[in-house]
Length: 142
Ligand SMILES: [Ca+2]
Ligand SMILES: [Ca+2]
Image 1: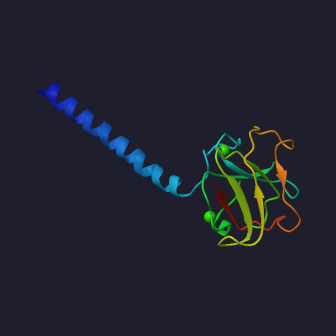
Image 2 (image 1 turned 90 degrees about the vertical axis):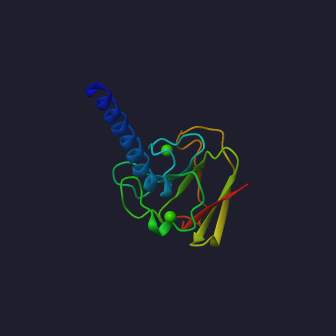
């Protein structure tokens, strides 16, 4: 009888851990960071900052639209908005349009999906002067 009780307790504990894991992941999923790895992987929309970097390139990755970059940071911290200079669109289906203003307004530039992998600077595209360090939103165009 003790063994049975112990097994039941272990199953309950296991369920609790799984539930906690799912709940713990929810905030990360709502704050889109792509796959969470620094490398730009297939399916990700990858921004990079190079010119003003102090100790390695700034990176910020997404899977989805973001109408407001003003609440996002680079992977090492620091303001992401109005600071990106390059993009590698590895979205498997859609182009990505980057906008100057929050809410998809202002100057814009559209980037086709690229089959290439993370290989700076070969596969990264440079922002045009009107968008250079003026990113405030991006939208998938399918
Ligand atoms: Ca990534
Ligand atoms: Ca945002």
